[in-house]
Image (cartoon, rainbow, N blue to C red; front, side):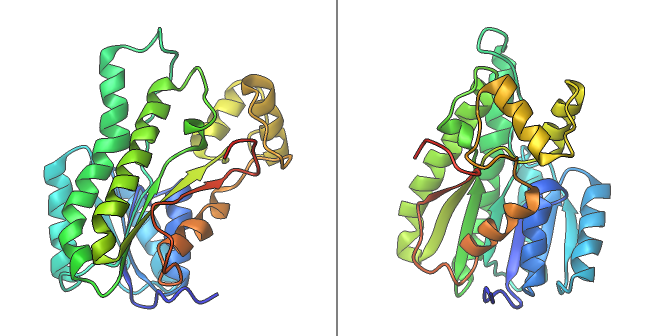
Length: 265
């Protein structure tokens, strides 16, 4: 399916690996100019080379800590100069890494979850808005998580931060509707990310086997999907790419679950 992304200018924050990279690849495959932003120089350089190989014109990797508003502002200022002051797509995939039960978490960990999971997204949207408003069409896609609808006792801070992402995104969809900038959320379920595969390995589960991974998730967390396996990062990318594309012309303020089937709405 042609998503209408030829020569579109796109930024994928957290695009150096995992679901972010999978999303960046989908954009590149459709001919978009893609910039990936992450904290690791090695990750963004490797990702940019991969995207150029896939046919993305002017693909590049930029290093920034999204928790630092100055660094984020500098990245988007540089992109504005390089791409003529316009941006069509902003995708935010970065999330918090904080785990622990409510009784275990210190105040600093709660603040860290909000800084990583919410303020980084806020900084990126704030810096990107002038560029998005100048473009003929523009989309924002933020990544949340299905844990906002199916709670886990070891992820209260993570889930709270993701719930804030949902709320801010819904508010942005209302704010930016007059500009016809569409804002949507993707909520991945149990995806075989590096973190999840690493957890599985640590408890003796073959994390590389999506069926074994889902069995482990069911056993340890009681969160089975209707499908008998975990999802893969490349199964998230096409959904995010569609929401970010011109083919999505009338969906805004939506939260799209990509979770293998679940009992929540």
